[in-house]
Length: 178
Image 1 (cartoon, one colour):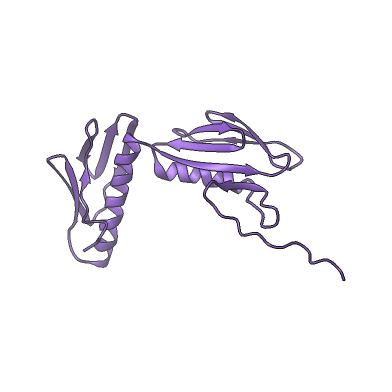
Image 2 (image 1 turned 135 degrees about the horizontal axis):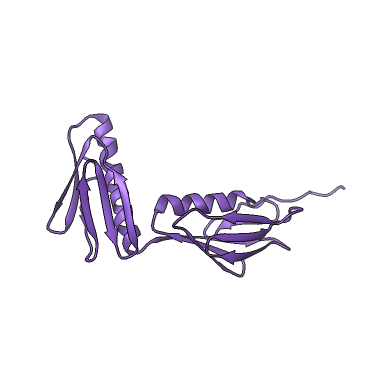
């Protein structure tokens, strides 16, 4: 049995979960998220606990078991706490400004770069830190990856946009002529 799939999900107070016609809807204080129900699993809600069980022991059912449980847990966490990713802008002359849905970045190109986030995502800027927040874990990660892709960190001086906990392995520069 799946180690992840068999774990029950405690439903916090203020969160309602409804299952109808193959769609699970989770509503909480931060908003509402929906997830299509996978075909080889069954979702049961009893006494404030959500459990996911699989219909058979086929390979696809085993794979969907853990996946569905993880997706539902992310929905519950998203509507209660939300998700965030932090990015750091490093480099001489590299600047970031804006907030809300738009970022204005100066990244060493001949032109300024403007990034607009998709719906449901908030961007905040503090000096050289960008914080991406939202209730959908997949959207938060996607927006953070798109911002990072604007100027990936380079291995010699570490200039670029990196995740706050990312470690950039540095290379030595030229050895010099002797």
